[in-house]
Structures are given as structure tokens and as C-alpha cells.
Image 1 (tube, rainbow, N blue to C red):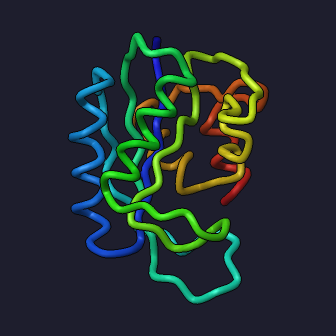
Image 2 (tube, one colour):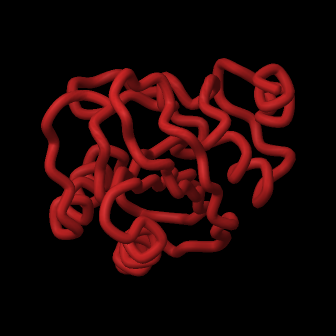
Length: 149
């Protein structure tokens, strides 16, 4: 199944954390494309935080969505992610954005990612590597990105 995964980090060495996360993801996903790294200001946070480094990858996996998210959360944990308050600075954040157009709402996971359509730091790197992509329920990512400009 085709999967779109977003990565972000703003603590420690974010570029290295992203690279280590992608290497670990390669063990569970056949990674086909990886975007450039994008530096972005923290999104909708009230406290002072360093800028984020963000990337998006496209891949193919046989893992079901709930199994995949558990594996990605395990990678986050191994890379030092500590969950405290929402939108806190982090060593790594890994999100499934889209899973082959699959729709899912559960306690563990919502697909497509419920806020991807409003996040330039997701749409811009995704458009770089898959310019004709569409986000289920929201439309072409190029149009979503243009609406944020």
C-alpha cells in the first residue's frame, strides 16, 4: 500500500534525527522518494521553540495502518521522543499523512491526517516529490498549498 509519511524535529540535531528516522523507516517501508529538508517556524505554538526541520517520504508497505503507526511510534521512542504537552518541541515526530487514500478514525490513528491540509510544512515537501497527489476529502495538494500562500 502506498503511504505518505511526514517527519519533523526541532530538538537536538534535527537533520540527523530526520536522517536516522528515515533509515529506521526503511526497515518497515519500501521508501521510494524523500523530499528535501525544509526549515519552518513552529506551527501554532505559544512558547518559544527552535525552528523545525521537516521532510516527507513516499513509500510502499504491507503493514496495516495501525501496525504501521505502532512501528513509527517505536522509532520515535528509540530516537528519544518524549511526549509531554501537545505541540511541545521534540527530537522527532513521525506522522502517517495518507495511506493509499484509506479513511480511518480510531483512538490510535486518523487517516488521512486530520490537519495535513492546513500544514504548509507537510504540503510543500509532499508537492516536491508527488506534485499530482491528492489528499482524500480535501483535493489536490497543489491547490491546498496555494490556498496557504
